Length: 165
Image 1: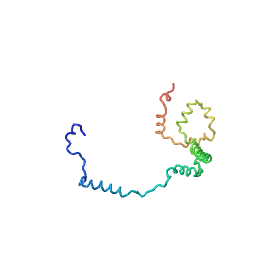
Image 2 (image 1 turned 180 degrees about the vertical axis):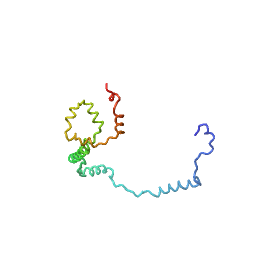
Image 3 (image 1 turned 60 degrees about the vertical axis):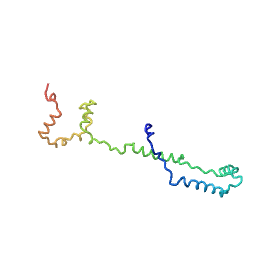
Image 4 (image 1 turned 135 degrees about the vertical axis):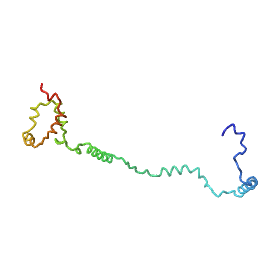
């Protein structure tokens, strides 16, 4: 609330129940009469109860047998689980799921770049090929159109290759 507006408050905000002060005397007197008439509350504590309480608690606690504790992570279980995890990890890390790369899957450009980088000569390349690889039938079966030859020459040859020096 604002400190400047405290002097303007006319209501306190607290209300008493209807006929509260008219019946207050009767309520107080009835409580006093009730306490005078009831001298015995109805609950009794045996004699010496609180003096012997501590000894009884200690004897009850010490008489309980200690239970056998079974560890969840014993050595045998840990070794068993870790060996299974290692086997699964090894299975996924091996290259058994990778398909072998064959000669058919090699890209022509990759092979050309490898040959250029390793500086192989024509005699070394010829020594790798067998007579079966160089059959005349493999070269004759191709049908070369003039348009395909022109496209190949335009895309793969430089002008310097065509001009004799």
